[in-house]
Length: 85
Image (cartoon, rainbow, N blue to C red):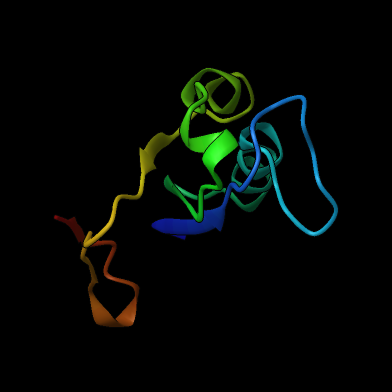
């Protein structure tokens, strides 16, 4: 996959049932072989925390943090072209 979009509701060390921490999301992205990981759905505790460091420990691809109003364009047919604005 060119881009994997995963929720990351809680910071590392504060897991909650049904939601992921950055490290958990990163492990999924690594296992899936995704080229890029876009983390989204931040609860206040996650938004106020360092999400990148624990994610980078478990995932070697590009990591992006979603923001309000962000647009993602993905090319049809798996062409590997993704535009983030």
